[in-house]
Length: 242
Length: 231
Image (spheres, rainbow over the protein chains, first blue to last red):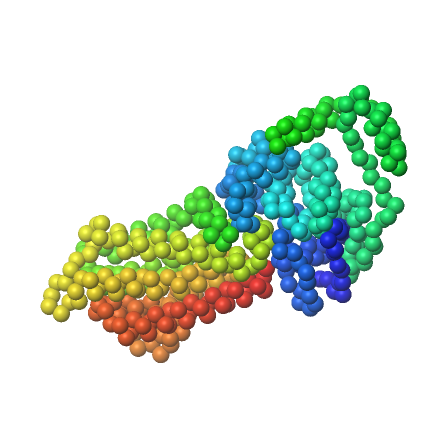
């Protein structure tokens, strides 16, 4: 039960709803998504294109991941969804599993399908209900980047997060639910983030100098590990194919 | 978008094997009706239309229940609102319903179940066929509406769904007995069945059509209201 909730999310803004289990986080997300109507009050200005990522993706359906995403894309009005599905699957490393039946996917892979279906049409408002549940470490790292890109494009993101991980994202508003009431704790202007880069060895000195000149603090320089190199090759491949 | 969602639902309905039960139900029904020998089309089609009514309603409930609840919410958001999601569900149910109706109309010809007039005064073959087709199409909207009202998205639990489905079918049969004072409260299953025996009776056909459509619209309004309350 929520009462006396007044909140606004402007273009380019993200908010994370924090609070204990049962505080009403999912209720607020459902109101924002248009899945629930308030008994009193109004939800206004909801964008036409909304993406919704559920806490648990419903994998008990007779589709392969590819067919499911194709259907969902067409339901959202995307005439030729194959390139978009390929792009997002590549990014979240779901491509090898696209022709696997949904019930045969692991929980984390099924959750990736849930993420992809919400981003097929580049939503003006992306709503994520506990987006980290079941995701592998690399995909968990990808979620903040996705959120940052959506915000950079002037769109909005609303996240529920009972672990409070999203509160660390730069510029994100924190909405805390206390006894059914929403407390807007604003943004943490002093929040800092760590950006990891992979650069060619002979460009390290120049990159560090450029970053320092831009007012950024460079922590350290280290040799790229296997995961870094995979990420580098993934990027090179996607740039080569586009 | 609505057609794409209807296609998604139909794919799911067939792939999960849930389409088999009503399909087999219709074949059993046809076996029972035509097992005793051929009949004139008005009489046979009128009777099969009444028996088909609960099967069509049941099929609609099964179709609308295939999708997990969370997926239904995703779909509502994806398609941009409850109205389009409801229309897509009804469209998919209509497509499956038309298949069963066609099966009911065509299979009897394939197994020699239909015969022409036998005695003087029997309605011509064409009149009987037209009346029988009308009876089957007439009962499709109220059957779809009853199945939708019995779906999990509307009533919430399997027990309530079965109660609504069985209650609707019983009302349809019980209220329609000859000289019933409350026949107007139910879809005209039995009156339609009686009417088709005599071939084309345009006056009563129009009356029953109006009754079936009004009943279907009222039940569908109830379905939409429950969906708006629950979703």
